[in-house]
Image 1 (cartoon, rainbow, N blue to C red):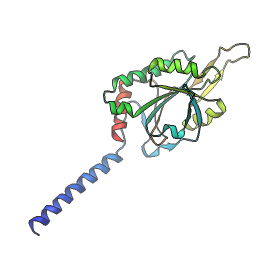
Image 2: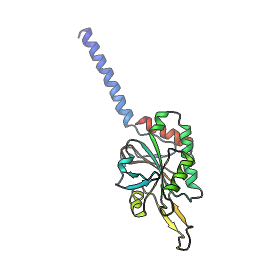
Image 3: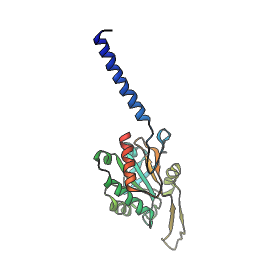
Image 4: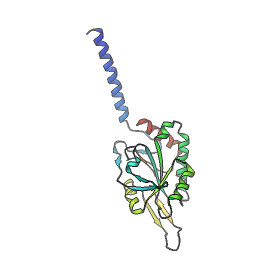
Length: 206
């Protein structure tokens, strides 16, 4: 074998080595500090239609293209809802890479559509971060989505004589990937710095 042939073989071997390394790394599961990563087990969301606080439709195709963090709650919630939104606001502050920030969208979906109209949602979510989006829908449209994600919610102590009642709901933050697939879950209690590191890993890995 002459010198030129040896050089060609060496270059091909080097390229092959990079290719193998890339495939191995791209298939390697993301190790999260504060959440559960579904990897190849991510599953497509059902078709749904919500309405955002900007009075725009939010459908499954509307979640494509970004990494979406979705929290289900209600604006009258006294504790876990404002705490979780504050945590995600602090997560945004902790992420230093603008490309990572650009790849993430936060949604607050109200499971109390009777009280949480667009105006109330707009004031509520933008208080934590102007980029956050609030959304809701009548329960008959909302439940198929929450059921597919394993998110429980239930209105209790409601009466016709009063608009004051409680809503029980799950406290997890749902991760939806840019293909609109249920890709992971962050269970409470949530930690802003750990969430920032996890989301950075996820975005950079993919």
